[in-house]
Image 1 (cartoon, rainbow, N blue to C red):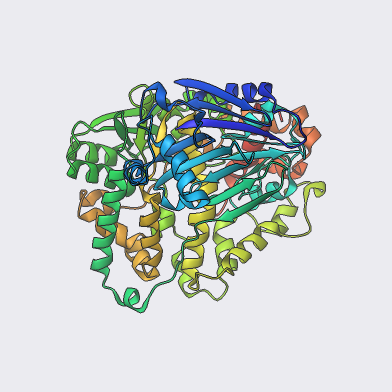
Image 2: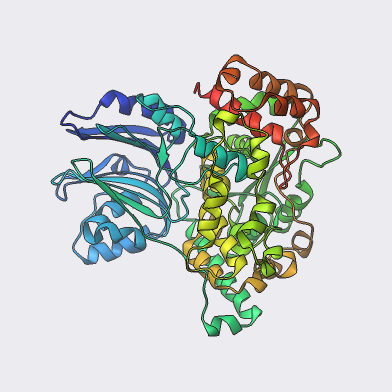
Length: 591
């Protein structure tokens, strides 16, 4: 796990080493163990290293193979690198390191762009071909590892974070009105290639981008899971699906223990993280470190799930640590969490992951986490109503969208409103794509390949990497996800949602953790904004920079200030926190 950056010049001038230096400074937290840069004419790469695999200097980056004429910077982990290395050695390749970075480089030489299909893991990388001048960028199937882009015709830059690109200079930092509409409508999800800034884009997940020396480029999507099933799969008994998922999940969890340092677990107390702990214990892990966080209650809403994480920690005898955060500390730490966001992310649990990661990083460098299970196995409440829907996109939008286009017009200032409902059109286009005919399958595909990427997955990466902590997500093992996509929707929706996964969990963890009301990462103080938190948000939204931007209607802001708890979105989010977080993010990053 690391931070990567680079510049490719197209106008005959050499790449600018100072831009690499500025980006590396911003990326320092992602890789506190080492830093390196290399420049060859029009191409310069930079790297910040977090030592996880091959702790020696032999795997320091940028990593070059002079014989092959290739240089790479890489962020992530390829879990099957040892198997791939053996295959490549059989083809005559020789290795000078024992890590996964060199395996990627030689796999690219052996298999070309198709090498990505052979990787099990999370990755964002750039490879430079010395002879052709070509640069190849790639991102993993679920976009677990970020890759942001900026270009102006003379050069293209890439980095693991948006603020790093801004720091390099020459970026149009004006707000993108399409991204703003997504943020306000699509529950703060801004899908690739958009970001909140006009001058920054992001490489979509499961995509390879090839940039030629003259600046021309092409992109290829290399993975698009099919939510279709054979007649045999339609009639396969529930119990067989359960057993298949259990076997696949065991493999996914085992893969993510590959490291030359200890691996722990972020234990929320929910089914998903509890299942990871149980499977690791069954596999023989002793003294597994687990970590939980809780917040002060507000408006009668409990702010922790320690009762369930304690059950799991005791049952599997983990080395467990709990972090409790009073509301007074929460306000003090919010600026740090916002600074860690590459993009504005409205979910309350950002601060939870941020503070928990700070604590975890004092003890270990790698954790497994339970993100992705709800999107892959059908755990959200908006899936069951879609089963009999005649208007899947419309019914999805009614539940998931924070506001429709008409309501948006009453919230955004007129100059920021677009005539077309971009967010709704995007969802309808996704639902109309081939490969998912059932309404529930359509929603699951959208959520697992779009929403998941630019909400939960991005959140985990940003907040953990703010403290140099690597987070691995076994529920996003692509083979497990492909299996889940083929499970008939009725099996996933059974038992109140995640039916198959809950059946798996009952084989592993105590039933009182499985058979309970669905929880989430609660931070009540950010849902029911009052006191000092309200003052902070109001000050940001009424400040001179906010007034000059003029994003929101004045009457709307006044209504939010007067009664924050009366304006809650369909997905239980605070409208005031949503608009306030955007302004706080813009000001924090001086945009």
